[in-house]
Image (cartoon, rainbow, N blue to C red; front, side, top):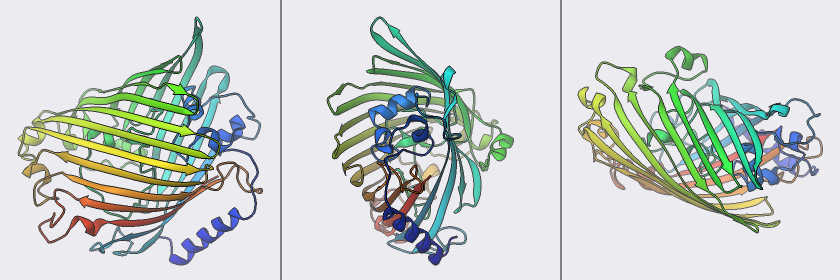
Amino acid sequence: MATKRSTLLVTALLLLSIAIGRQAEALPSYARQTGQECAACHNGFPELTPYGRLFKLNGYVFPGDISSGPPIAAMMVDSFTHTQSPQAGGAAPHFGPNDNFAFELASLFYGGAIVPEWGIGAFIQSTYNNISQRYSWDNTDIRWAHSLLLGDQELVVGVSLNNSPTVTDLWNTTPAWRYPYQSSGLAPTPETATVIEGQLAGTSGGATTYLYWNRLIYAEVGAYHTLSNRGESMLGVDPTGSPSTHGPALYWRAAIEPNWGRNSWEVGTFGLTGSFYPGRVADFGSDNFTDIGIDSQYQFLSNDHSVSVQASQIYESSTLNSTYAQGGSSNLHNSLVSSHIKASYGYEQTYAATMGYFRVSGSADAGLYSGISANNSPNSNGLIFELDYTPFNHGGPSFWPWANLRIGLQYVDYLKYDGAAKNYDGNGTNASANNTLYLFTWLAF
C-alpha cells in the first residue's frame, strides 16, 4: 500500500507537470504511430470517437510516423477512497477500514502495429494490481484487418484473437469498455452480474471474425473457451472457484451507426450463450446461460463541446442443472437483468462531467444469494457522479509530449444494495453505507 505521503507526492508531481506546458503531439504508442493527438481517437479515454473506432477496426494500423520506437506505453493509477461507513476488517488486506490512499495499479501496453503491411496490430495489456498484489495479463486484442471496395462501398473484414467477450467492441456500451471507466478497488460493490459482464474476462481465450460495411453496419461472431487451471495460473489469474466452459461459449455482436455532421448514433445487440461447469466440477452436468444485450450510443463532437450518451440492457436466462444438483441454488431456472446508462458533457476535451445510473434485478434465490442478501435477492441500483480534468488530450508536457493525465472525482450513491435499501444483510447495514467518494489520478505515458 502506498503511504499517504507518497501518494500526495505523486499527485503534486502530476499537477506540476500541467503547468510546464504542452506540445500538440499524441497518445502514447498509438499517437506516435498515427501522428494524431489523443482527442482524435478519444472523447476522454477510453471512449472512442468515429476516427478511433476506425483505427481499432482496421487492426490498430493506420499510416503515420512509426519511426519513434516500438509501440509501448504504460499507465498508473493513484487514488483516495472514502466509504460512508468503515469496512470491518479493512477494505482489503494491508488497508484500513476507511480513508485509504493507494497506488492501485500499473499497466504496460503494446499498442499499435505488429506487421503494418499485412494489417496486423494489437492492444495487449498486462497489469500489476497493488491491492491484490498480483501481476496478470489484462485486456488483449490481436487483430488482422483488411479494407476493400465493393463497387463504391467500403468493406472492412477482420479477425481477432482476444481474451474477453466485448473487448473487441467499438462502442462504449458493452461490458469490457463500459462506464465507469475507472472505479475504486477498495470500495464494496454488489455481488451479482451477468456472465458476459466479466466471468470470462482474462480467464478465457477466444477468436472472433467481423465485418464493417459502408461505415454503417457492423457484425461480429466468435467463440470462447476457458483456460486450464495451469494456463490461468501462468497468466497471473487466480483459478480458485472459477467456472469452466463445457464446449465453446458463442458470442455475437451487430450494430448500425449512421453519422451526420458532427453526430453519430449507434443501435445494436450483443450476446453470449454457453454451458459452464461451476467450480470446474463436471460430475453434475453443466449450467446453461444465455445473455442478450441491447445498446445505443449517441455522440456529438465539436472543437469545443462534446456530448455522449451510452445505454445498455442485458437479459440473462439460466438453467442451473449443476448448481441446483449440488444444492447451491433453490431454483433450477433464474433470470437477471443488468441496466446501465450514462451521459457526459465535455469542454475542449479537457473538462468533463458525467452522471450514470445502474440497476441489477433478478429472481430471488435462497441458495444463490443467502450469503449476501437477507432477502435472497440480487437487486441493486444506484447513481454515479463524476468530474474529470484531462489537460493533455491535445498534447502532453514539453518534456514528454505523448503523456496523458486525468484527475477525477467520483461519487457512487447506492439506492439499493444486494436486495434492499435498508438492512440488506440482516445486520442493520443500509445500502448507503457503501456510498463511495473516490479521487484518482490516471497517468499514461
